[in-house]
Image 1 (cartoon, helix red, strand yellow):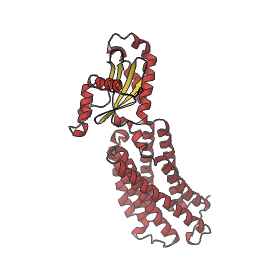
Image 2 (tube, rainbow, N blue to C red):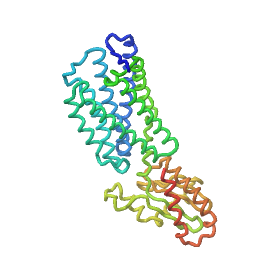
Image 3 (cartoon, rainbow, N blue to C red):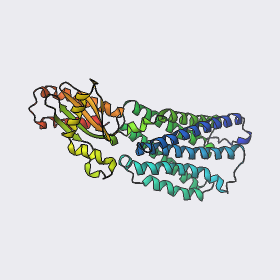
Image 4 (cartoon, one colour):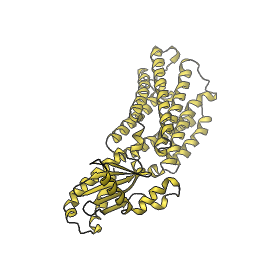
Length: 371
């Protein structure tokens, strides 16, 4: 049988530990919030999808810290009457923070999460349950279970985002995911509903430390503005050209964006022209830029609203038409060039002009870009 520990935080011998740890955590948390919101502001025009992650994280963290402040006031300064709305407000703030994050992600990353606003609706439905709940009531227990269920959405989102990333980007997203897990565990251990089942008060202090450590890991992982932009490389990839340098002819061309989904805005007009021209104007631009350049190993060519990434092979060059020259795309282009040489290196030397020879390359490229 578990001996439940009755804790009076106002006279706890660990009071001198609780308050400093909480204050340091809040200071760090609000600094991270400011960082995330400033990153959102600076990126909102460059990449709306990447910026929305920083906005969502910032809003979520603000709500969590507001709930933490109320928890500290309730435990150490002014004990809230359970019959007033101040008792439920802590949980409502947490649920509202989850809603802001989930709604933004479901709206912006529908192609990745594919949940069709299910979690957003579910999160909103929890708020009425919290409003009418009382301490230790069934409604409150169900609401907390629902909040925990919604936390799974955040974890699943970052797992999926990490899967489509590479190298250091994937590693940092994994660290950030661990930070989110630790933050969740810290909040859970130090929450009022769990406190009633704690057998040692030091476990609660560990929960506070976990919350601090989790926020710190989230900051270390996500402080770089380019992180989510790199993870969003699919949105920036337009097309691939592999060009025979002997004849200046396109041996292989692949379009990665569906033209019919493009709008008629001026922003997309140059991209449409590039896609329509495919292996004609694109090749002429690439060859002309490389020939006229004083740089012997030109890697990036600017052409209107698009840029061309160049990877040199033996008797051929591989190029990506992209919106932004991301490190991830350079990595993929180099990998494609290596695999092209491996499978078609001898064919290029005696190529007869038949582009169907390289059709099997599509399957190889599909495997490379499926990370």
